[in-house]
Length: 100
Image (cartoon, rainbow, N blue to C red):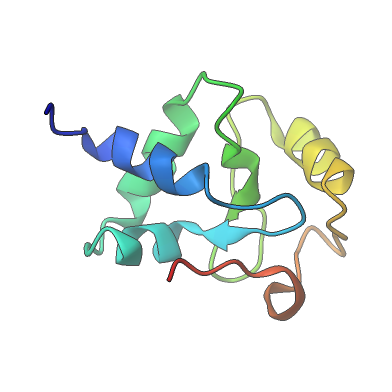
């Protein structure tokens, strides 16, 4: 069986985030047993597959982070998922998804 690249591992975790929830770049890195938070962000930014909900991954400080299709699109997708955004931040107490 072929070993997944780091980016593919990130995408497999992102696919698990349910609609209405978000996780952080840091949480994905921790689930992969690494501290490469920025590498997770880079992987998400390079994703072109619409089936991978990269828009559901945000910064640990509750800010939205980036998105390869632009921040306006990320906000639109998050709102469509039912996530409330206030001052470009998301309440992680309410919307956090953790990998268990």
